[in-house]
Amino acid sequence: MLQETEFIRILRKNQHKITPQRLGLIRYVCSNPGHFTAEEAYRNLKKSEPTITLATVYNILKIFTKAGILNTFESNGSRWFETNSALHVNFICENCGSIEDYEASDITPILKKIKESGGTFVSGTILVRGYCRNCAKAIERDH
Amino acid sequence: MLQETEFIRILRKNQHKITPQRLGLIRYVCSNPGHFTAEEAYRNLKKSEPTITLATVYNILKIFTKAGILNTFESNGSRWFETNSALHVNFICENCGSIEDYEASDITPILKKIKESGGTFVSGTILVRGYCRNCAKAIERDH
DNA sequence: ATCTATGCAAACATTTTGCAGGCTG
DNA sequence: CAGCCTGCAAAATGTTTGCATAGAT
Image (cartoon, rainbow over the protein chains, first blue to last red):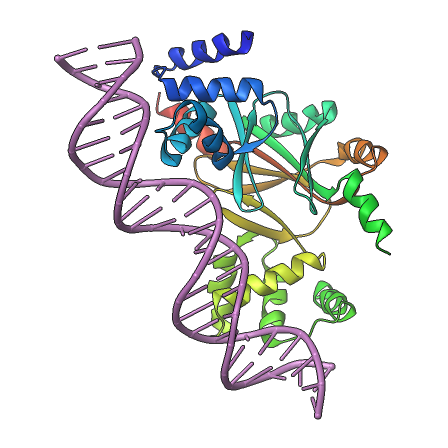
């Protein structure tokens, strides 16, 4: 996987050591390109790194986020992570909690305004709430 | 204040009683049109309603949000509220924590895509992180 | 009079912290 | 082998819950 070596490169550049736990998380995010919480990553990492603790996962996730490997946002009482790609819409279903990505190519004008007023962009998240197709259908049926 | 009677109307329509605590929160949000947490609202409401508790504030905030009076999002470990206006950008400074609004007139195409795929829109939040003008300047000075 | 809302305290969930020992570079 | 990282336990933070009483309609 190309991304794996790229992520290692980024970590090394930022003077971070490549521990088995960190490598495990890199592999997890490379093979699970969706959204996940610390808890989910923890459960998954335990398979390859049985001694790992949640605190370590939080620690690693914070480092990865600062390094720009991950993007993070808060929703439904916990923090979510995703591989950091272009600014896009996270559509969160109010019923089943699923998170779905939508492209948002038309966002750049917003960032321009912020820069014009002297601000510096670091990261962005667009959260849209509603009911996903499946839940919208199910709710309609209940009427 | 025009909004005050409008908010009361909305609550009544949804079968919610107008208690002094709720009226206090309505007045707070009408006269403080920025962003606030439950804790901040609590501190403010205590002035006029000294017996109020945080739990009640949370309760009221949830009701107001469901009724569409408030919009809510999570950031920096806690939940934020704002009077629900058009979908806009919340620019959050990573350094000082300030939240600033930016217009986002060009968002509608995104919602269109969600509707086209069968989803139902409820609410949306755009969070952009970076450094506000003041902090960006200060950080630059430190070099 | 009815039924909902408040106030209180305790529970809960998530994230952070401090430190001793272990491992990477 | 120096310094950063992990694992552990405990603490801190923010939010929710259950229940008895008070209050709005």
